Amino acid sequence: MKKETYVWFEEIYGQSPLPTWGVGADRLLVENLHHIKNRDICIDLGCGDGRNALYLAKFGGFKKIMCVDISEYAIIKLINFAKYLGLENLIEPMVCDMRSYNLESSKFSLIVAAVSLSFLNKRDMISMIERIKNAVGIGGGIYISAFNTRNLENVKDTVSIYDENLGFYTTYLAPGQLYNLFANDKRFKVCEYVEPEVILTYEEPRKLLLSAIFVKKIAEFQ
Ligand SMILES: C[S@@+](CC[C@H](N)C(=O)[O-])C[C@H]1O[C@@H](n2cnc3c(N)ncnc32)[C@H](O)[C@@H]1O
Image (tube, rainbow, N blue to C red):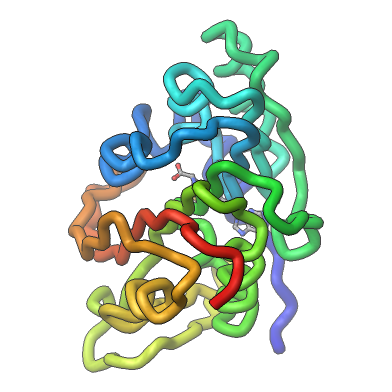
């Protein structure tokens, strides 16, 4: 397996003091939040500079939002935005590789991973999804969005591609795969699943195809 570095993300976050991926949370997260009644601890894995985490801190009613990202500069920006918005007491920021973060079983009311698992290789991505499933408590929610193979020509099955320039793997899920990972697991109820097109605007506007899901945990065992 190739060595991974995340220098590329540091460069991207360092290009401007403004929010790198825009402001405001993802629609699927906002519109499905009402499914979660107990708002205790939330964690955003690969939170970036805080688009979703800051929304959840401001409007979610959670006691704490843990914010994990491998990029130090993303976390510095997130802390600055949280201070500016008077939300720093609700945010617990950590520079950490999510793969080595100890996700305790049934600890979280909500787990968010917005376009962050895509930057792991296939094996690590699937193993992170299993760990996320275990780490959410009953009645809690999970929101995941990830690239899917419709971004690639002539590729239908899940694929991990190593990019020498980026320095890490990018994994693309097959259409419907994210849905099946939860719909076939009796512990979860799928609240909404979509495969939207999003326009990424931080450089030249670019169209990306995502798989996105919001689920609620309804049982501890399959
Ligand atoms: C496309 S950005 C999305 C940021 C944020 N979730 C959002 O939606 O605005 C992907 C983020 O995942 C982070 N990331 C990638 N691999 C990671 C890893 N192994 N552990 C923690 N964060 C990671 C990157 O540093 C980057 O901030």
